[in-house]
Length: 286
Image (cartoon, rainbow, N blue to C red):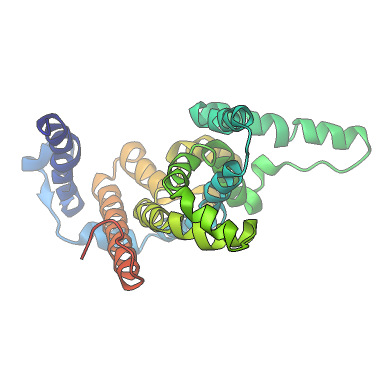
């Protein structure tokens, strides 16, 4: 039963890792792995001396911080609020409404935001009609990272509630009854029963999110990069794409991708270590 999953994991995860050797080669696709020259750490040296790489790193870190601070708590809050809805039909309706954006592509999401917040969008037409100054959020580099985070929340926060709702459903109802009999109100029941019951899942999801923290939305950013320029929109994923696929600097692009993977691994191991210190199991046990 495990064999198909192991084969898929081997074919699409571990074997592609062998391509990381390109980071240490002056890789030419026509010559292949055997014909291209080894250059040691030269690609990393070129990478660290490239100002556009550090721009991509800084933009990635900023977007990661915004997503952790603003996006990550939203599904938790939504799950807690949904759990307070007593009427099952109303709860199912709200769940269906907030799940729906997850199934839309980024092309549609960006187009919807353009129609609302763009220069010729609904809000600007309303402002112009009433004699007020318009503003174009979609092409403003200063608010671009906040715009990305808002789009991510609108698209995926509802879908992210599924796991947290499952964690709440697994809490023993007798704990709520005991707390109510002891005179605990809604806030105390949340603080002393719901939150401790959700804590292992919250820690687990946070660790997994940190492992993917430097992946901040390739397609979403690529669609809007030209509107605000690379100074505001260049991230590690787009840096790898433009250097490797567009410019043909395969060695430098692979070095950036390899560096991103190593940093992500370090973040997961560090977060898991911290979780163990606070008595949580984390992704794996000690």
